[in-house]
Length: 391
Image (tube, rainbow, N blue to C red; front, top):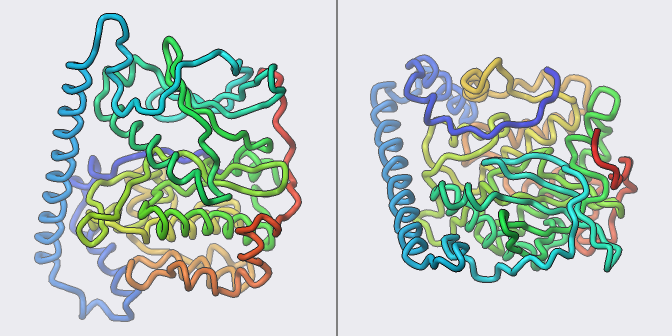
């Protein structure tokens, strides 16, 4: 399957139309991971009833979130003045007036809800940055997105301090028509663009291990220091820098789990090809979804293809629930195959975790201490971004 940029989707819209056989395949995949046969599977009727209760809890949580968004929107509306409608934005603390220092030079990509990412230039400081812009009109008209965007700013700011494998969010500024997130620029672009420029859209195991180690370092920091599940580890969010480092960006789907019961979430968000089974069929999830996505990332880096495919989102989800087929990595080493297979385990409780991943032989050449100090780097193999507008 040819690589394509990942899409973001909520499987709840498809889940109600699945057959009992589809859910049964997901149950069988979990059973295989636990080492039991079909005769030991739970009664399907009970499983479906349990699934219905979980979905009901998820919808209740999303309903509570919607009520919170409505309350935030009402408070913002009450505070709006005729002189400055910008107070309609949620959580505007720390948003600066745009001083026009950075001029947008070229568009690097598009995001959710009409957002865009630009290469921007400061002539005064002879400096380039990445600038994510979001329309004020969209933020005012869509309370749900406004709340998600405020959450993105809060979590990205917090994570920018203390981890060298997360792109630094420098400031959030207000323009006449946009809110802009000013971030460090990854001079070599994202990992998707780099990978698709290589023969077979894949890289060697040493470099794949390095990129996965950088992502693992970022995820480890988010989980342990911030209590945050990222939920969007993918090629497009892995940014390459001129010194050889790779960093995660885009906290649009991230969520703080610390403080929630059992540190689990019942809201379902993610990018289609990277979503774990529990995001699709179980209805609740925790930090394990990031390790599943790391497994998908490793598989793509090593083979140039996604481990789960389909003509549409529903078929991709069904492929995930059917279980991982390790034969698709026949041309890689047994160590690499074992690493990916240990991450792509349907049973969340048996999936490789942080300690297990760091200790795996796949990372035998990685100096994690040096990686986190910034002294262990692999020379970049990508071409730097130019200031020339894209044609």
